[in-house]
Length: 153
Image (tube, rainbow, N blue to C red; front, side, top):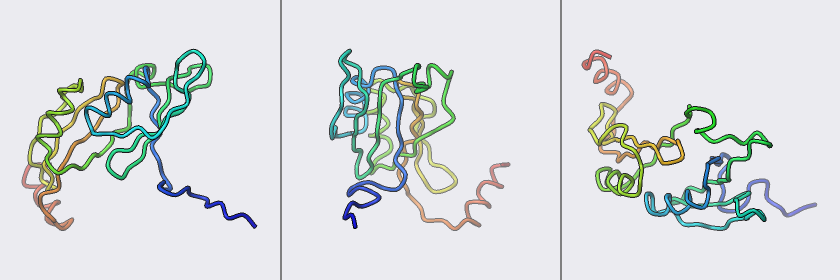
């Protein structure tokens, strides 16, 4: 009988795996923009990164360089991304400014939203979207629905 855990210590059952053009730069960007901590990387002989792991807060993410021969395509190769990361922080405005200063593109500046978060949206230089938010109010689903309806939504 094996003592190996099916989910490794420190991991969650679902872990995002980002495919990027320029993984080394991505690690640097995520460190500057979101305070990421690099856990490790596995470089290829050509200098590209086959696999890396970073940690943002208590969340881990995997990332690797785009490899079209293996079907690993970045958002640039795909012409965009249908995925967006929700990143909760203590101060949306400060975190948003930090991400933009690090090179993120503004898609929506910080604003108070009907669901109770102060929220913003940026795109990282690799084509991934990041929603940066601070939870400000605990609301019921009914309260959120009423606020959305009052906005005409």
